[in-house]
Amino acid sequence: MLPPGGRISGARLARLLGEWRRGGPRQCVVDLVAALKLLVADGRLPVGTRLPSERELTEALPVSRTTISAALDQLRAEGVVQSRRGAGSWINGPVGSGGGGITGVADDGMIDLSRAAPPALPSVRLAMELAMGQMPEHLASHGYDERGLPVLRQRIADRYTARGLPTSPDQIVVTSGAQHAWALVLRLFVGPGDRVLVEQPSYPNALEAVRAAFGLPVPVPMLADGWDVDGFEAALRQAGPRLAYLIPDFQNPTGLRMSSETREQLSAVLRRTRTPSVVDETLVELALDDSPAPPPLAAFGGDSVVTLGSASKSHWGGLRIGWIRASADLVHRLLSTRAAIDLGTPVFEQLVLAALLESPETVLRQRREEARAQRDVAVAALREHCPQWSFDVPAGGLGIWCTLDGPISTRVAVVAQNHGLRLVPGPRFAVHGGCEQMLRVPYTQPPEVLREAMGRLGVVAASVAGAGFPADGDLSLPVA
Image 1 (cartoon, rainbow, N blue to C red):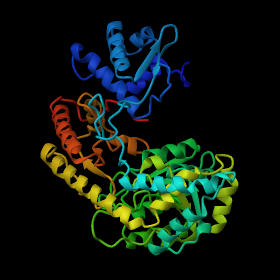
Image 2 (spheres, rainbow, N blue to C red):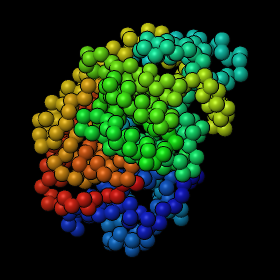
Image 3 (cartoon, helix red, strand yellow):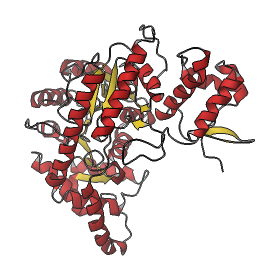
């Protein structure tokens, strides 16, 4: 049975590949394989996409039929592409999807630095065992709850209250991850053509969700040290956005944290323009220094602020539990639209997170200690192997936002595939391209894997710098 998915034409694939050639004819197969794998890793060739025939690819790229056959053979051997006689070829799975989840190195030697997501802590397994013992009392019910389990909503509300933002369980809606929460909010607020103000750079999946809702993301560039309040005010008045999306705590990808003063100033601007704001706090619990945490942005913005949270970074992405904190009135409106998307969040996973939040600091302390050690390893190894790059040591979060020695981010990501590294190029974090001199380097792998990864990255950086590519903005791969 063939997987579902549309077919991409040879001409369209050629446009996505852009200037994919790096070396001479002998390097052609290697370069083509690396470029195609980058498209798959970036999600621009989704799983199930039907590929053009070898003849069509030969005409579109253009290269010899032998080159196309050799490239497809290698991709098939790695499990990225699957083919069947009479049915053609299609994208079978993500790059490096087989194995290696525990050590950080896949069976094919690939190290995944494309996801800033840590593995589960041992406490997650213990919480699962506790949740299993609680399941029988829930099995007698229908299992649907569009708000979320009361015990979990209470513990999430208590966590906000402890951070200086009094919250009741009625202000919480449990979702299937923060991305699902964002989709619910977009469905309520944004219609076709509505503008959504976003930071530049920002989280790529959040930008894609705006586009999926037929909204238009409007970027406001970040300053080197934080948020440009004047720039936000100008954009709010000129663009008239329906909504603003902000990541004030360890912003993804820059790692910056908004000060209390800036929170107050930006909230005042949003109130004056009557612009609701959505605050993504996915990384808020991952502070890695001892400086006091500023109050949540909702403490300054009141009921006009919708806050999104998640267990994905602090506990484990496999739980797929997120939440929305909003006013009781907005919660009612969100629930009235939720049935069109889903009917609730799985009970077992909610019980697991409720167990983890019974004594949250105990679990979070272990996560922070692990992340702090991994960050320090990555920082030292980056300085050793990529001394020509610059960066600020992040005070929290899960990644380092590096400034490269030229507009080479996409080229680095492409070449890195040949050295067993999977990276997301800087332009993926921008609304309309840009950030070609930036690269996010997550530090969520074990220390020994991070050292190996930074060593490989140093080889890649030297290779790209010595390749003699023009630095005039002619990107090797266009970014969607």
